[in-house]
Image (cartoon, rainbow, N blue to C red):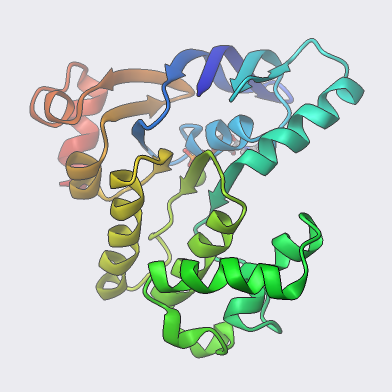
Length: 246
Ligand code: ADP
Ligand code: MG
């Protein structure tokens, strides 16, 4: 589903992603962990074309972004990848002046050109699925952070993505609201969604992910099954990181 071949990303002289190669098959749930500034967000953003890449290539569901291709040729590819990839950020970025259901309907109406009624028919069951069937007419400011993040997930799912990318989706939440968001993500994982999740929730990563990528200084330092990674980290860096977060 995702094939990354010698991916490099530089910001000026700063090489933030260094020669990353890996393949993520369909239905795999991958947790990306590592210290702050190691390149995790940049890595996610390169997967869905939010960042241009400076070396190598990234292929998502057959759409190839090659660093060597002219920008013009990539526009269509990036558009296709965005359509097939849902992204959820630390900040929920809901439209404050739109109701919950309007937030979920928005891309269906604007991008997919659906009628309001068609969009509503899709949005309603999605809100029920994230446990917010009762809140469709509320405004974001009337919801808790956990509820807002669940709306953001429903909004991403409305586009029927093949892949979901999460960038620290629970980091901005009060501790007691983290679980409700992780539960929605766990359900998605169990339904077979292909997911790449940057997270600091080690227990969630261990319980839900099929695979852990430990990133440091722009390199994937370890790529392992959760039990192996958490019980027997191979590198000093990972051992040190795990001591710090536990
Ligand atoms: P992480 O998500 O692991 O904390 P990031 O991917 O956000 O790390 O950042 C990795 C490095 O890339 C940092 O050194 C950061 O300063 C740099 N960086 C990220 N985005 C930009 C940008 N838009 N311009 C310049 N440097 C950036
Ligand atoms: Mg980040």
